[in-house]
Image 1 (cartoon, rainbow, N blue to C red):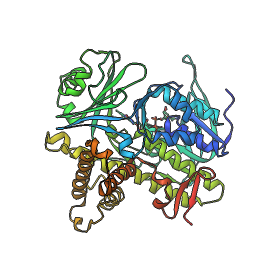
Image 2: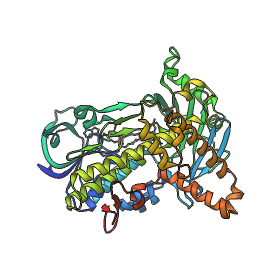
Image 3: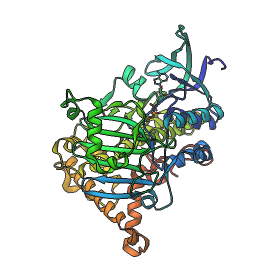
Image 4: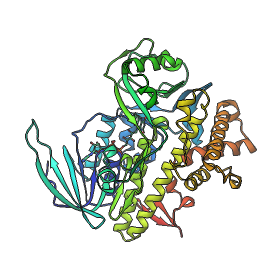
Length: 486
Ligand SMILES: Cc1cc2nc3c(=O)[nH]c(=O)nc-3n(C[C@H](O)[C@H](O)[C@H](O)COP(=O)(O)OP(=O)(O)OC[C@H]3O[C@@H](n4cnc5c(N)ncnc54)[C@H](O)[C@@H]3O)c2cc1C
């Protein structure tokens, strides 16, 4: 391994999807990038189900062929048993094309991305912990790091200066937790996830082999994610108070009881054997109050985290990475000022997060009334997101419902109700496959609206001139950058 230089143009903390994506995109634009990662890869990580938005990101990274040919499970959609509803979702139908996502073993996926970053010119160093940051006023300018010793040997300390910092340190949140002190937990989604891996499982009776299975139970919900090594990842998400109330009952019993409560998941596992220890994560949802500032950008989980129901984590990580790389590239080329880029990043990333937040809560809202406690606890309160932001997120999401004038008194409840209604309508619409194939006129328009509705949550809206933020949007012509609306 060559030595870490004393100075770099862009320093990236963390080699997860957010870090390696930002680093690769910057390196492909000719920026000198150093990435420091605490672990030695491959390392375990949860977050295995990827949305179709991974495809345009892989194209941008120049890694699409690697992704398609690796052998990951191809995910064409999902099969849900959500309350009384049962339905297969097909990403192609949602987006109006033949798109797909993947189920990945994260140790392999993250390693693939990190190796790709090195191949694209990023100076990647593993086993290096960023210990502290040093500031010039509010601007981070220098990092102290520890090269971890092997076989119990003491490590070696070092320092590196930089022009721009990308904090992609995940939940550790170096900037938000230790310097900005601005990570705020929401009142909603105070959930716990418990998961493990199984072999010799039965395929789902419905849906396609690679689909994610999602089954609700009275106290929460379960996922089943088929992986390419022949195992399936099965997890349960419950409210932390419900788990705490089961004092005296082992985690394994809570997990098995949850599986038994879901017909969908228990059928899949009826002949299966568990191959791992159980793992757990307390799944609070949080955001930093500020995502960027002088010379720094917070990407992925380092900025914000959302309950895993919609599999939004890697999407938000790579989306924010794209925004940060476009922003820094355009600052360096003189196309935008630091202030403009910082505003653009802040607003675009927060908008993407808010869209998922509102959508997620509305999705949970469909099951409200089945078990008051769990489902009620997933409802947004004004403290989670201020009413104006909620309203803005809603308006940009739901293209067909523009009149919010009568919603002033209790915006957050009104918004959730309308979102749930909208999701219901879209799901019902999608369920009727025959209708989908013979659409004309108004129904065809409804199908297109349906596709717009989902792509406005899961799509890369910042790449769209029509969604420009303060006159700026992300362009890939001739290379990734921020462009101005003419
Ligand atoms: C139960 C659960 C289920 C989930 N399921 C899904 C799912 O199905 N689909 C999905 O898309 N997302 C899912 N997620 C979310 C997903 O795991 C994350 O959103 C995603 O990994 C974020 O990527 P990241 O690059 O921001 O952070 P990470 O992947 O966490 O990477 C951060 C990296 O920074 C390194 N680091 C930390 N501190 C330092 C330091 N001081 N110096 C150097 N390096 C450092 C870490 O070692 C780590 O490798 C799930 C999350 C949970 C909790």
